[in-house]
Image (cartoon, rainbow, N blue to C red; front, side):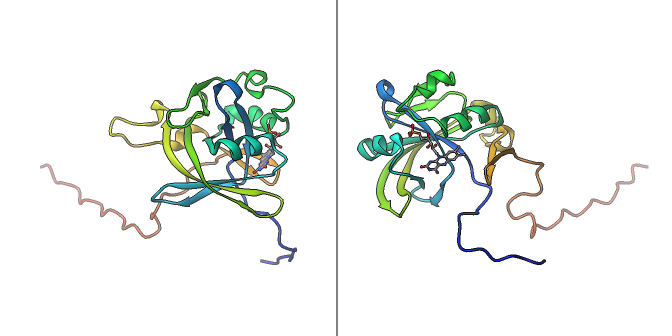
Length: 196
Ligand SMILES: Cc1cc2nc3c(=O)[nH]c(=O)nc-3n(C[C@H](O)[C@H](O)[C@H](O)COP(=O)(O)O)c2cc1C
């Protein structure tokens, strides 16, 4: 495979374009964040990276709380809009008709139409350059009932989650495997039973 070398840049993809809510119900705001991910399993830790110019940066620095709401194909327009308009100019919840419910352990609202929301409390803020890194503990998770089967198993593949690849939004494609499938032993085929 022939390759071209470029200087270091943030060409990592796909990333999840999540909707991050902050503030309390009286003064809530929401923005789109692509620079997010998992940092640790136990305790469950995540991060978001925000430019200091964002209104949400100001709010989260003060309240030290936010919710991460996973986005879906149905939310793609809201995802883009909340990423190009500031809460300084408009109420994005109202403009995009985004319904919310109050958070449980944090004061920030949870998006009703997001299939999975994480309530987060900030542990540390680290200035990196263009962005500040908000390291946070995930205190609670809210999952759409429809995605949990009778045995309590989560089927997040049914949520039609959104991916962001170098400036463009995509749905997820077909399933290609599952964790550990490459080393899993194939089940032996049973010999046919002779019923005579
Ligand atoms: C797909 C997408 C991803 C984005 N990711 C980030 C991000 O990771 N960090 C950030 O500071 N801004 C990001 N933005 C830009 C903010 O969402 C945008 O500036 C927003 O208007 C800020 O809103 P606020 O001023 O109400 O907080 C992203 C925008 C889009 C469309």
